[in-house]
Amino acid sequence: MPESQESSENPIPVSSPKTLSEMNDIELVALVKDGKTNAYDELINRYKGKIYSTIYNMTSNHEDTNDLMLEVFEKAYFSIEKFKGKSSFSTWIYQITKNHVINFCSRRKNQSDKNFSLNEIEMDDENRSVLKELVSPENTDRDVNINELQKNLNESLQKLSNEHRLTVVLHDVEGKTSGEIGAIMGCSEGTVRSRLHYARQQLQNSLKKYL
Amino acid sequence: MTQTDIEKLQKLLEIKKLEQPSEFYFESVVSSFHRRIDAHQAEAGWLNKIIGIFDFSPRMQAVYATGIACIIAIGIFTAQNVDHRKNTSKTPLLASQKANFVNDSTDQLYKAQNADNIRELILASNVMADADPVKTSYVLDVQPVSYENGLSF
Image (cartoon, rainbow over all chains, first blue to last red; front, side, top):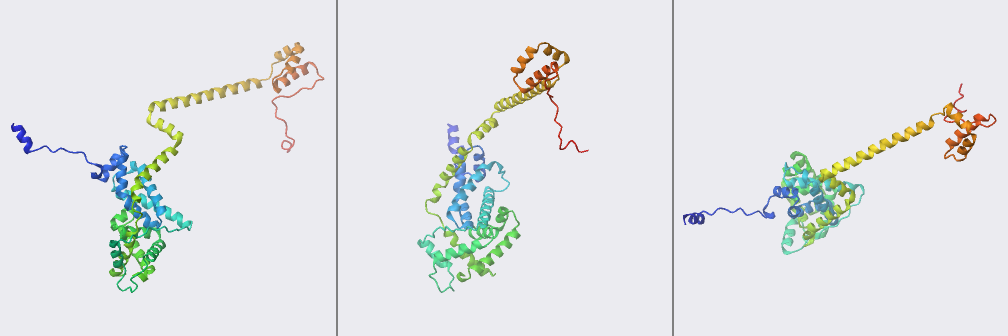
């Protein structure tokens, strides 16, 4: 009887196996290396939105982004053995994305083939209020055509060099720090800040009428 | 560029965050990825499958290595035999051999008529020519003199 009392008072914690969604990236990568492909599905689900966003903001083309994103995940899957955990999985997959998208943009620049295929901005109530805030109070034309603004914004971004565009996208759209961007792009934080300053100046000149 | 300018620009860039694909787009990403992987593996073809067998089975590697070694050994052995036969056929006929042919001219004629190749025909003809000085004799295994390059003195 005392034994049962003891066990009921201090129950031995039962370690239930973690589900894939509870695991961190490194644990999932270890499972993928062991041949468990469903662990890679979880990694795709975690990063698809971010990788899509980065590539889309670099290319301004949904169809190209779809292909490039799948290629990035495929490339990462086949070279997962090379991932030794020296950096985070996030940095590693962003590095693959950066190399892949910059190669693509360089080829496209040579072919002088820049077709926009922009996603629509959904005009629900929440977005509408955000968009109202985006337009400067000094700007008298409050009913600015959002589609025109979107097009001009994308054109201005495309005028930047690949490195400057990626820096501004990662910092001002994705919200990454200079340190993280430096690790992804393989350069110092100083270089990142310098690129950011130059890119913002260029954008300010191009988008003067909206600021 | 002032801090206010930067903030205005950052607000404007937030529009990029609102540009999103259709609602159900992301649901199909994993299945699209698996389709690509399956297609990639199907494209790899039979050669990669064979290489894959060798990669994973040391026994198959040993069998493959032995097979290749045997093929190389047979190749070398065969090449040496061919060279040996060639060298033997180039050996000039001995005088005693010629005499035997001369002694039996019918046999020589028969050989010349039934020669399998030009070499045997010439040899048989030459033996008969030795017996009959009027007949033409042919020279074997001697490079012809080039009148263009050879007479440059």
